[in-house]
Amino acid sequence: MTASTSRRSALRLGAAAVAAAVAVPVLGSPASARSRGFDPTPGSDGVGDPLFPTLGNGGYQVVHYDLTFDFTPVTYDFAAVVKFDAKATQDLSAFNLDTDGHTIDSVTVGGRPADWALSAGKSGQELTVTPGRPLHRGQAFTVEIRYHGNGKAPRLGLTGWKFGSDGGFASAAQSSRADTFLPCNDTPSDKATWTFHISAPQGYVATANGELLDRTPRADGSTVWHFALRERMATELIGIAVVKGTYLYGTSHRGLPLRHIVPQGQEDKYGPVVARTADHLAWLEAKFGRYPFSVYGLHIYDGYTDALENQTLSLFSTNWFKLNANGQPGYETTMVHELTHQWFGDSVTPDNWQQAWLNEGPAVYYAGLYGEERGWSVFEDKMKTTYEKLDAVRAADGPPGLPKALGGTNIYDGGALVLYALSLQVGQRKFDRVMREWVRRFKDSTYTSEEFIAHTVDVTGDSSLDPFLRDWLFGALNPPMPGHPDWKAAA
Image: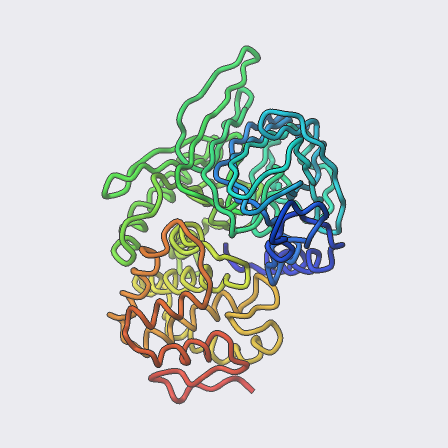
């Protein structure tokens, strides 16, 4: 995602709302697990995310989500079914899901009706499911939840729904709003594979993460669009939409399928824009190795005001694509930013949101390098400006590795500054190896800052990089910048 002022404000509000939420019980969290028998009473709320304390649920891991979503444009009504396969990580008498703004119609576990109850908090709702039979540690189980609602209905927390002039919608769920689309385990630490079945009436198209498998026409003139994402994805990266759009197709230079969705009637305007994706992929693949998924594309929509790295289908506002004051397509740096996230953040995902600098830092860093190569900016100038301001940001918002909230300069430009300092300390060749091996080793998994520090020491063989990175990530003040002893914090 990009760090616009509006998104920073929204994310800060979201973090504050979650932190202030009423503690809602969650059965089976690791912190409350009992050594023997079933846990008959609620344990703790959330999975312990430092920035979103009530986010997610313990006691189980989701393996696969299957979402059927029947949406009616203009009225914004929907009816949906989510099925998921999961595995209990401890004995459970009940388990919780995150949800917000849905009317639950029925719940089954293992094909049998289950008891359920909703509890309200300030940031959303908890759906507590009690199966007819307790679940044992290691047991695989299936859940089906039928529910309905309206996209514009009030939510207890922030919404992930974005509405356009066409009467449709697109999802922008980051960081904690996937639960406004489906009951789920809404934490980046629980990644799963996905299938989607999204209906769209005549004149509209549906989108979702992953590959389009098939389309099924219905008697009422609508079409069900079937998608599959075979690589695991965190809930916050969900990219469903029903819009008046046109699919544009292409391939990367090595043959990766590309599919983009642009506003109907504006194909000539946005066709040349999305066509730049092949070159962006080639530029990044030369640095990191192969793109980690089986398809990529952009969704350009007037219902959104920012840019967001939904997995395999980045979401962009129509307002992004304007030439800068010098007549240059500077928006391409944002395209590279969101594409970089497909490696850093989507394939290699933070275990919790306090690790977000290693999503946003690389995205800012490589977008800056790309802009410099194109002659649109000077990356060193950007890093010097960041260095001068970062001490004050550390004091107000926390250092890059310990942010107090999401969306600030500390995790964006500050995260890039950490990487810039590392590149100067070890040299570009070793730095490139650190970053390339990071996304290779941790592909399709989650990470922490501690793991990045250990990885850097391992790849370089230089143990002095442990305290070096700790100072940059967690220190109250900027360390000296290698090679730039004249750089000082602003007064």
